[in-house]
Image 1: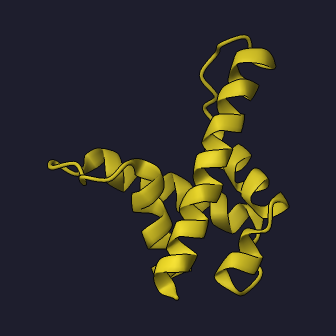
Image 2: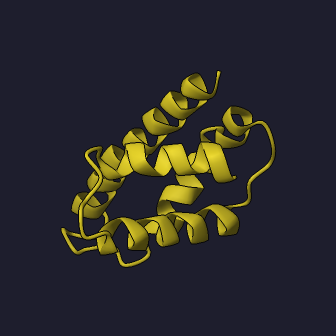
Amino acid sequence: MAADRTQAINALLVQAEEAHGVYEATDLGGVYDQDWPRWYAEYAVEHGIDAVVGHAITTDELAAFLATSNAEFQRTERKPAEPWAGYTARRIAAEL
């Protein structure tokens, strides 16, 4: 069941990534969104991440977690073999 939850979180993060790319291109005119963790968190909360993890998660809590996870992912000398969404999905399933 944990694998199913991780896969569902991964799919939601990939959807958020795709939607955010459109948002950056259209609404921000191609400018990098420095506040992307909050945008992803709002998207994930609006699209039911709390049902996937089995409890309520606030946008603030998830945004902070996404920012931390990204920083850790970027600072790892040997990058994980999986993409960021998979790495973060595993962490969310285990830690949130």
